[in-house]
Image 1: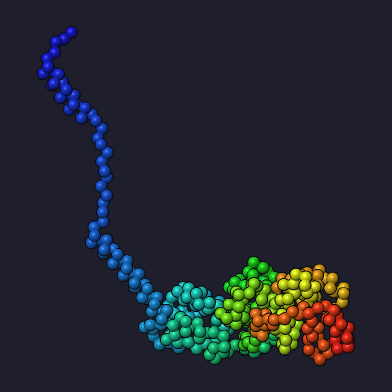
Image 2: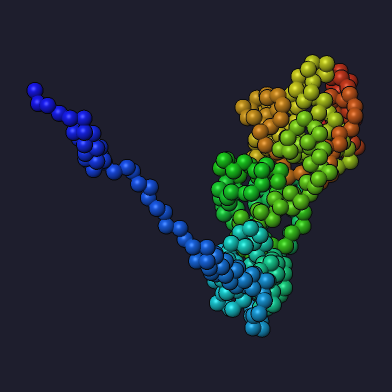
Amino acid sequence: MAEFKKEDTASWDARQVRDSRKERPAAHHRRRRRRIGLVPYLLFVVVISGILAGIGWLLMNDLCAFNKDDVTVTIEVTAEDTVSTVANKLEDAGLVQYKWFFKLFAGVANADEKIGIGSYELTSDMDYRALIMGMRNSSGSMSAETVRVTIPEGYTVAQTFALLAKINVNSVEKLTEAAQTVNFDYPYIDNTSQDANRLEGYLFPDTYDFYKGEKPSTALNRLIRNFDSKMDETRLAKVKASKYSLEQIVTIASLIEKETDGSDQAAIAAVIYNRLNDTGAGGTYKMLQIDASLLYALPDHTGAITNSDKKTDSPYNLYKYAGLPPTAIANPGLASIDAALNPETSNNYYYALGKDKQHRFFTNYNDHLNFVNSSEYIGN
């Protein structure tokens, strides 16, 4: 066994410590992140802000018609034009500089519903909104031929299309196709349906100016927009206060429209609501039994309604099915809509027309039947 000294042990320990430090793997070093200096960062922000402000200023100048050369031009809008092609014409004429921005604004402003066929004198002083309003239907001096028509209250969708086709607004086929396929931006229009009857009740009867060959969707939108404007806050509040939806109120109004000449709408409305709410006391059990709705399902029907007609299997046959029909049966006027919102208070469940063209109202079936069998009834 070798002899060792205390100092040898100390020397060995010191050397081992030094060697072990050399062999130990280096500790993980933190990577230094390069940081952008404050001055370059601020300079970057200023440059980007300047670019965006410059673009914004250019767009705002175009939008508001600032700093433009004086230009007066005539723009022709045809039946084939769209907002996109109109924007091209405005750019070519020097009235807008950025047509893509005009189209963006036009989309928000519903310009496709406002711009109509015709010849318009426009100037570079007009901002985007003024340009759109300057090309609205019946604005300025029109070169396109226009026609004025009054759509009667109670006309159906089919009758309305036939009337518009008769004065050459567009063909029944194209109007029907638009009614089936166009996405109308109103919550009460069922855009999932491809049935033209989805517009029944919303083509408001009124006097309109149309262009011959007018785009079908534009013509239909004008009729619906008129209905929408009539449904003001007061009327919508009454709809909300009722237990019926707007669609149901319009359907009830259409039944009222077809059942009376206008002198007793509120009384007719009372009978309809009494029947809808009847649990047996009135003896009707929610059966409305309205002839006009059955005839809507039989558009080619002539003559008096027969018992055979009353067996027709259609949801519009209110002799066979309880409650309301699936859609309105006509386009009601404002008086009928107001009657649907403000029915008379009564206990009447029946009515029948006398030879004097006045309705008689009854609370029970026997009294109603006695009148129908009398010489006063118009059917006798």
